Amino acid sequence: MGRSSTQEGFTQMSGFNVEVKPFDHVLYHITNYWPWHTSIWIALGQWSYYTHGGIVLRGNYEGDTETRDLVMDITASGVHIRPLASDVINGSNMMIMRAPASHVYTKEHIAKLAKFAWENQELTGYSIPGLLSQLWYLIVGIGSSEDPPYVPSRFICTQMSSYVDRVCGEHDPCPRRRDAVTRPVDLVRHSDLEIVTERLTLAKTLASCYRPPRSRRMQLAE
Image (cartoon, rainbow, N blue to C red):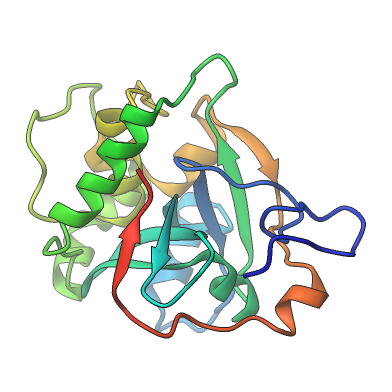
């Protein structure tokens, strides 16, 4: 991804309409309204357009000369780390939210984020039966403010985002909810996160020449 843009309103560093930073929360709008997709039931149950979430980090893919803005999320198949720009190009509607300016993420925090990403690639999300068993918590969101001191063996999207922000970044976006019951709607309505942009976009000049990574091997920025 290039470091300059000729379109007014797009950042020089990344080509996005806003500057994204490590630990930014990415909330995905619902885009599929077919009844057999779990997201539609989560959306209806929470009365929210946001049904999935991830967190931003940075890194270099092997063969790249530029540091990319990446998004880390989790699905039933496991942890995924990919260029954030690829989601924009593939048509995902994303909102970016960020901790208040009073909270400063240090180099140590960012190093912990990279370490978590490397060391927990084996984590998985819930299978469909397991996800169904969690729907009550995802919809109702019942839970205390107590969190376990260990990494859970499974996560659901914003559970992981909340955990990573709290443990690696020393910032709990939803202090009144345990990570295990932090839903996308909670990050939107009940957290201290601030909206950076309601719709992440990419300059057309960069989108047209975007190239996916030539390698799956990457080095995360610390």
